[in-house]
Length: 59
Image (tube, rainbow, N blue to C red):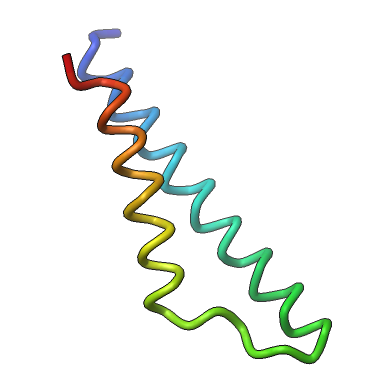
């Protein structure tokens, strides 16, 4: 497996984890009677996680 494949797989895993965290947060918010986080907040968190991932592999 090449380096590109490894980076691609890690990127996909991180994106899936971010989606899962967003789903979990929505469920917790609904269970507590709160409004789920708005889309801008979720998108900001996704971008931050992607930026951290990108920084890990910038050389």
